[in-house]
Image: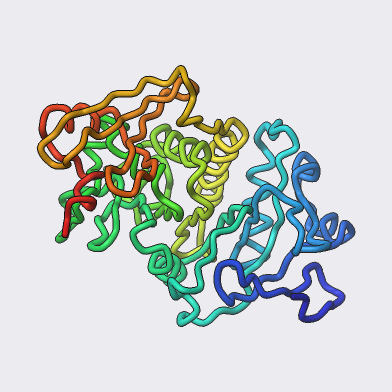
Length: 329
């Protein structure tokens, strides 16, 4: 819904798909040129002429024009050969914390990538609930967290993956990332010597591991929201923005290469596992296209992402975390 049009770079709309947050969207070509972005980005920017139509592959939202320009120009330094993958650009102008309510969440076709602060991340995480996955150096009590560091935590959450567990086996985080609708990436998850973020520690993900996580997020067909917690974007260094742009580049590479698993393909590997937890065998499937793993929910018959480790544990009589919620209650 267009509220008003002004002689400025952005027009204002309500983005009711996610919250009642007011977003200023880049609308006119002359305004795009006024931003003085790298020319390599122009083919990938879709102007918001009619936001009721799906005109872009994703929406990028920032908290300020300065953040938008700084980030995009860092991104423009990289090779952007992504088969004309397009995104719309916007700035978050105003919101009310009470807008972040689970009932306001509606699944959309166009993913939203939001570069925001701590308060906004808490709000969006609350909206997604158990469908949120957080990458952070501290474990969140009520949410699955990846790469948390035990010496920084005073609470744990069943199904979370510590930094040591992640470094030993990426597969332990795979099913959590594939199941998530909303992914929250805190920059403190990356070690300080790689990210240059003041809030980071000398221990954490290295930049290669972080880029691999973002690429995998891009490959996922389940999630439609990615949040980067910048904490304080007014005081970020050039190296911080370069790190953010690099992470997002690998997310774009994943999106560009995303493959849809065909669970019913006749060449898939299907394993029927007898067990003491359910009356019937549970079906585990490894798809022939991507080699990723799924299982069939024994009660609802829903197809749920899992890992090879989940399959091996279940086969040996151990109930993996991904199946615990099914038997609880």
